[in-house]
Amino acid sequence: MESNVSIVSEFIILGLTTRPELEPFIFISFLFIYTVALAGNVIILTLISIDSGLNTPMYFFLGFLSFLDICCTSATIPKMLNSYIANAKGISYYGCAAQLFFFTWFTGVELLLLTVMAYDRYIAIGNPLRYATIINRRVCIIVAITISVIGCFNSTEHTYFTFRLPYCADNKINHFFCEIMPLLKLACADTYMNEILVFTADFILGICCFILICISYVFIINTIMKIRSAEGKRKAFSTCASHVTIVSMYYGAVIFTYIRPRSSLTLEKDKIVSALYAVITPTLNPIIYSLRNVEVKESLRKVTKRLLIHRRQASAK
Image (cartoon, rainbow, N blue to C red; front, side, top):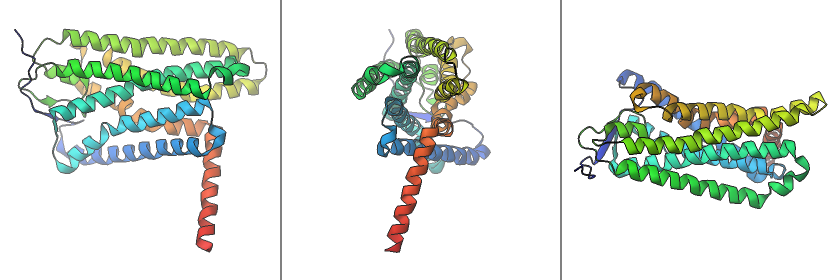
C-alpha cells in the first residue's frame, strides 16, 4: 500500500544550468527580461486605463493579457533571481506548491484569453456593425471572470494531485521553477493518473483552444478576402498579426512541453522551451502589440507629450 505522505519538506531548484560560471550571465539576463516585462506591461495597462480612446473590448482584453503576463513572470522570476543573490536554491514544500498553483493558474487563463481574443477579432472584422452589441463591457467582464474561475479550478486540481504524491528522497527539481513535469519525475509513486490529468488539461486548454483559434482565423481570412480595397485588407490583417505571433509562440511551447509521453521527456530541453512561454513571451507581448499597433503608439505619444508639458509647467513654477 502506497503512502501519500511526503517526507520532503524542501525542494532544491537547480535552475537553468548547473555551471556556476554561467550564473552571473543568467542572473543579469533574467533581471533585464523581468524589468522589460514589468515596464512594458505596466505601460500597456496605464495607457488603457487613462486613454479613453483605448476604452474598447480589444484593449480590455489586451490589458487583461498584460496583467496576466505580469503575474506569470512574477510567479517565477523573482524567486529565481533571489536564489542567485542569496546563493540559496531551496524552496519550501508549500512555497513550491504555491508557485505551481499561481503559475498554472495564470498560464491556463492566458490560453483561454488568447482564444477569446481570436473570437473578438472575428466579430470585429466579420460583423463590425454588431460588434459593440455582441462584445460590450459587461460581456468582457463576465468573460474575464469566467476564464479566471476555469483557470483557478484547473490549477487547483493540478496542484492538489501533484502534491498528493509522496516525495521520498530526491528533492532536486531539474528546472528553474516548480513545474508539474519535473515534480512528477521526483515522485516515488505511480504518476500515471497525474500524466493523464496533465494530458487531458493540456488537450482542452492547448489543442482544443488552438483549434478554436484556427477556426476563427479561417472565418477571419475568408471575410478579409471579400474586402475589395487593398488598404482595407491591410488594416484588417494588421489587427490580427500581433495576436497570431503571440499565439504561435505561446501555444507551440505549451503543446511541445505537455503533449508528449513521459518516455520522451527531456527536462534539459524542456527548461529552455518553458522559458519561452513562461518568460520570453510575456516580455514580448507588449513590444509586439505596441510596435504593430498604431493606436497604442499614438496613445503613448500623447501621454508622453502630456507628461512633458506637465513637467515643464511644474518646473516653471
